[in-house]
Length: 276
Length: 182
Image (cartoon, rainbow over all chains, first blue to last red; front, side):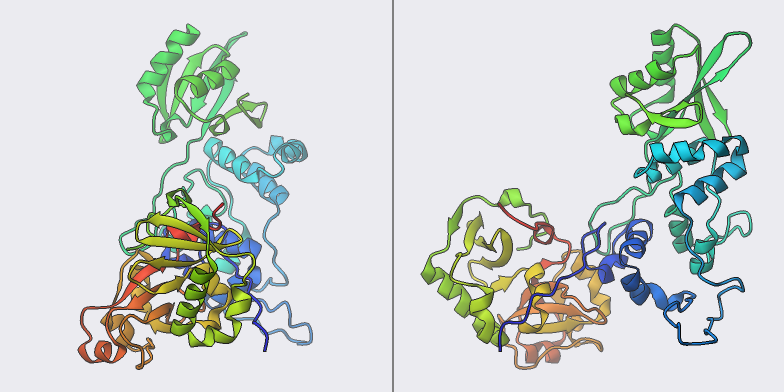
């Protein structure tokens, strides 16, 4: 009898352990589970499938497919949204005038969709919920019911909201708590005032752990020789600088406050570009 | 001794393993894991030889083609690394802990007797003190940890108090994350 062949093991692409041990880590809901569902759907179904509604796609012989009790009427095969659909739903909700520019945006961001949606969420607000996730995981929109259970909100995070759950690391064990940290996302845009005057608006500065708003505002005032003020808009802090300094401001932030280039976005006509 | 904070840079000198040492390692393994006997020569072939990395004065790590396969402490048994065990699950002597112990083991704790005695756990009564074991968990398919018994299996079941198994290597520790050593 020859040596048994080595088994090839699937390890979680996020935390590195065999997927059955992912639930013991701090980032299971936010990182491990979505990654597993994307990469190994069969395994995900096997490990976590027992609690959800399943539409048996493989039952092609079965003339009357048995639908499990929690699935809604419209089931045929409900697929998760593609990035195009996500973006369309997003702009439908917040700014329908931008919908024609969607193909251009997507080509620009192909491969970086996560970053695109996070920047959009910082600018506009929560992303509209994909009905596929609603059915599959029973997630409920926050305006429908106020109590969102921890597991559910974790899954919503999988869609890429502004309060991104940062990877807490690979430590597991009884004393490890998961870390919810706002990812550093700074968006710089400009708005027009009367005649030829502009205002530069910087939002998201509070998401960076190293930046103090007042100091930043003073630094801007010095650098751009224009008045700069901190305003509180709907819970978010915005820094407004007189004049059109969008690009310069971006570079200044990266240089002075040691923020990474990938974390600073410039709003060019609705499209988000990283600082160069 | 554990690999909790181990990194591949902790390995200092590397030497190819002498044939005599290689023979000793293999016979040690086969002694602890009898099911390994018919396959040991194909698992650990003569060429290329293993490479030994000294981690501390009492810990040596052995790699095959830059993959960590075995490790050994001065006074302890020769133990396989978890990635190696995952590839050949049925060949190593094993035991099973009950599911309540899992979060503790993942944090680096040793296994207390109740973890090996409670319903859901499995421990072969013939295991003696010092026996190297691969630890599985109730309800899980893949090995969770590797260690050796600090008490004989019969004593563990009788006394049910104190540390039953010292865990040397567990899923998610520094050694597990080190997929290759150059």
